[in-house]
Length: 260
Figure 1 (cartoon, one colour):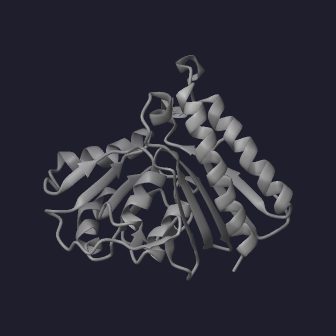
Figure 2 (tube, rainbow, N blue to C red; figure 1 turned 180 degrees about the vertical axis):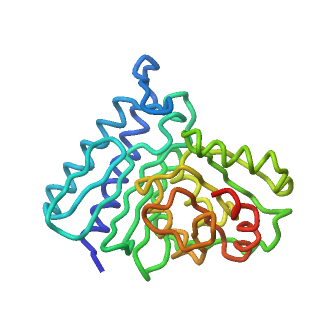
């Protein structure tokens, strides 16, 4: 198991927890810019991305890096880092503390490790393949809740018209009017919440691998299940995601299978 890679990912997220909180306290709203579909980006995203890629390239010069804020760094190795330096930029820019840093490492389709930093809670979630899921030094696991009526759902439609259309169908069809729903706008927050049992399922659309690779392994290592909307085990390239405690997964898929 790649011990050096895991230690490096955790070290990076610890630094970003401090940096992002510092920048959050002094953020200037004039720094807000927009990408495709009016998705927010700031100089803090770019600063954080530069820091992460610099550390990874220094330590692992043969590994690829795919991030939200820069072009792919294509090196000769087979391993690929997926990073989102500031997951939940819109929250950050508008003064909400629901943002995170997501770092995952993949090799030939297999996710090897993940680290998610949550600055507002000063927490580091981390995992490695077959090594369990952890929050700092505490091992975590998914919830045992077995019904939708009492479940906590975390939802995110994404930014594109296609993603939003999926959720219009979801709510317009009155599919699931039970349970409790929250929209956090950060996959790192949402997936770590499922992994440590604070939420029972999350339903995400219009996703990118840098948003979710770390969190997917975290949920699986915590005992949960992650698929696309159709129920196939999630793989890089899928645009939809359902993560759950596993107990209610088939029931949740009954709500999503016709939304692809």
